[in-house]
Length: 487
Image (cartoon, rainbow, N blue to C red):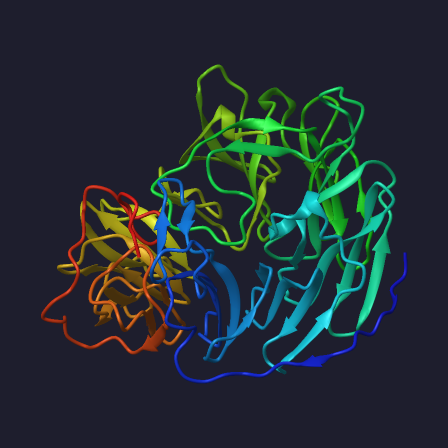
């Protein structure tokens, strides 16, 4: 299917200045890595008839009290009211929001918004997120859905050329598009069969006690899931640069112009060359493109299966294991040869070597740098040189990250430099790639729902004389773990 011109009409958007939002209870949903925009929910109107503005947070993140509404704030000021935040491009330039029953593409760099025509935002897609629209890894394409009778077509819009492809799926109802972290491919999940035999095709719905239907939710202490309702989804693969749809049960995943497939005998092949023999009956967990390596677990009776690395004529053991319940999903496409998991550490698929974490456990990765933790102590590890640098007198929980900056409670560290670069008055709501932190200046300690407006500040170089205490016994899932807090 060829692309055809589809220009959109730009509408100018203003950019504000000063603090972010109004003097109201606030929950931050997302901020730009550069701090140029923020999406936050605020209770600006008294809707419960009680004195003042107040919000309670339930155990599962449900909000009670005055109604919270999402706002998009570019720069600063009160921002504009939206119906729902859908997502942002990986480079943070583009945003997708729903406003006035339209799906809007926002260009933060040029200060323009565009209405995506006839986008499907019906009730079945009311949750936002990837069910509504999503960006590809290059931030150059946006994928959304367009109604077609009882189903939908998939629309791939090239943002640079203002062209789009409308793709009709040969069978079933397209539900979710999940782009690869790099390259042109995306998983397309399609509901094809009436699994519950109720006479209609319905999207899967997770059974959960977490709030699902609200545009605004608060920091949850915990939540649970227990199965799904609706019909099962089948994986297809779709090239976002050409619109090609690939549906072949033998395909484990495409990698560029080549395929990882499973033969009738169970052998795993890459570009028609056998990589894992049939006797293994492997589940492929991850793929490395250059040099070609497959992380895979052979069939076995144990609940924890060892993961091995396979290449052309190569087979290495690794420290990684995979629970049988985790197997069966399409494998990840790794950006390099190193695989890290919090449970098993890191290994290099190039030669099978295990990376020395100096007795610590892996927490997160930013490029070639790892944040590791031993007990309550953190450290920075350079994957290229193996150099480890302890972050002295630092404990707490990771609250926010952007680029190489990480906020651990009120401490801001730069993983690239391997040191603490500053301190916030209390654990911040967000951090940007310049190392600034987002706080509510009116607050003197961390609370679940702070009172706005918010402000970006530069962390001070020395620890403040007074900062909010932390509770090392239980990490904060979002903003704070604890009993409901009244604001």
